[in-house]
Length: 320
Image (cartoon, rainbow, N blue to C red; front, side):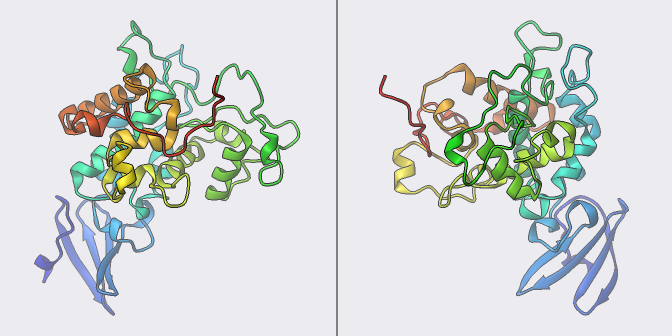
């Protein structure tokens, strides 16, 4: 009977109980996996890290293949004295945040290779957007991700009155960049706050005070389409999204390049091989290497970059 339960990962398992069609599987890693069938589909619960009976929780969870030492390798310089968020970011805050999204497929979609690549891709954005690395920095420019948790010298308060009815700016609040994939502007804090059920519109400072919340905000953005009918970065990366004919004409293909298009639009994409794009790609490739996957798994140029992609949501710049 036990042979019928392929849990999809290399830990030996023992079925210890079966009651009313619910199987409780105890893994020798001390993790308990509860398996049941709902409408013909196998769904699982893996306790705190992947809870709530999801098909994704039948796969390995992130902590099975990405652990504290790997987090330390990826972000080796984040707690050096010259960094700007010493002691803020850590593995516990990341894995606690990820527990909210693993049942939805974050880091739990596909086989182990796809799962590891998605974590590297997500961190590619995080590392690039929070780095204080530069060409001759100790350890190289890519070792300095998670150096920041907020914009250091904001030039404005990022309050856009156009959104005063939906996302009114709170008196005294400043909506400068904060977080693992930095959030700017009142309307973005409002939308992320709604997604996380946190009052970020009135308290944007929560993001720079709580690393778990900061990671959750980045994961929410990764998992959530910017507009209805468009893919999330997650769906574009893991292959859930099927491009339309218009997407193909706009040179948008499933893969890492399109995640940049979704998150940054024409600030990064459709401008050729610009530094702002290449630094994100470089972090992704660096993390693939450090995680033992290898940058050759990043895919061909048209999948990896967005240099020639038309933006999903063009910014409206004046003709000048």
